[in-house]
Length: 203
Image (cartoon, rainbow, N blue to C red):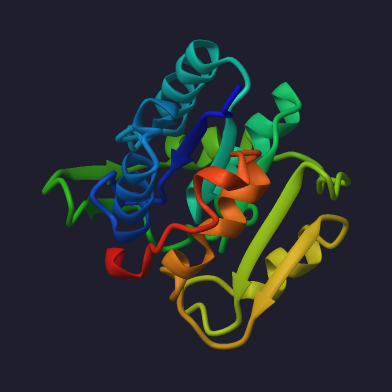
């Protein structure tokens, strides 16, 4: 049975982001669109987690792919449900990073304006888990020139996991499309479905 993938975007991002769009188009090319979910996550962590929990229940045991804040959510849920997770420039303890950032926020994909409050930060703190210790269940992809998060925080936090650290890049993770075969291999999608497929035009 082909695995399902549940992609979790970051703060003020959406299913229209570049990585989410590339993954969606790649899965469609493989004839596996039905095995992918890319939800538009609510800005409040508690509502976002409820959305994701409902999708996990629907899909069974999906592989989580989380970017930035989505990586933080994926870690919490992977630990809670024993799922596999691939994390891309994941946020580490984001509740400690919002000093001075409370107030109006704008999602440039959806156009939504919303208010970041102390309750958002408290809800994020409730999702904090101990550093994962399972190399088989976790891959963590980091780029050293991430302009939003210091990759060394994730390198230290996920040191017991399978780390893939690439020099340069940025927070959006440059070259994501070239790594889709690695993602599909990790997700357990049969190699014959993707090994001879060219994804380069998805850039």
